[in-house]
Length: 320
Image (cartoon, rainbow, N blue to C red; front, side):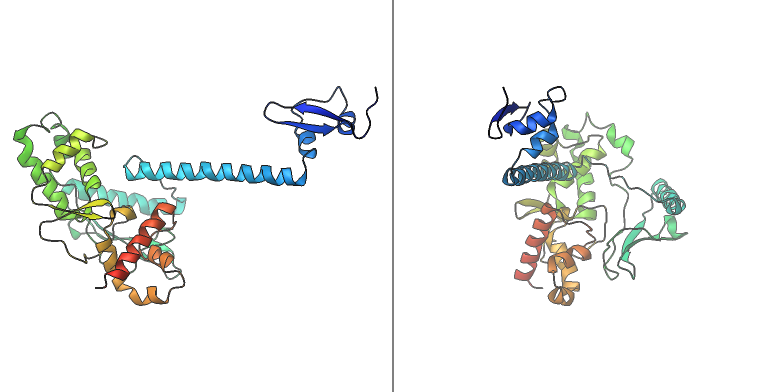
């Protein structure tokens, strides 16, 4: 029986059911017609239905992207992400030299002092200011998009405290014994003296890694907390920061350490950086992005944006 123009035929795909005009079905041909014919399904949609489908797809894509970003942030905060950087061929020789200098300094027990300063075109650069025993220097430019300012005070990158890593890893069995408390107290005190103020979770991870663990579980964290000694704990918007005894103050000299996550930097330390550039921040069209640039942040994720906003608000409410 012939179909009129107003007659319709039900078409049900695996994931979509709709009604297509009988004329479209005749044009497709009975032999070539398939239930999953995407073109036929798409052409049968109205403009409003197409826009609704596009909005749904965009929302789903956005949700997946945000979920992946949150997952990466959690893993990075937990120390489960290994940073990898693609190096251009023309920079590989300089990078190999830098690695050789770093390895030599670690073997000799000396420290390397590495800073990042802005180039005239606002790109970043990495400069090794001191090498093992101060006998060599290295000056190489990198392709970072942003870097801390020139007048930021750099901090030396010291070898991990507590002795040889392989030796400490052998103390896992003794880690929970009372006889190991004195040494554990000394290891924790060395880290606090070098890195404080720092988040309590970061301190736990540092101590756990020194002993060969990849993370600080409940028992390990409790053992570390019991050996904090006279160290002070101060909350910053729900995050516990560890301070040296009697060292808590409204300002701490800002230290240039590119390996740190911005949320591992106390707002008291960031406030010192903001104090140095108060005039630039006051005249900046976007103070938040200016703050990110000063701190060497190239990409503002939602979590980093929220933390910087909190630090800026605290800085304005607590002038030096």
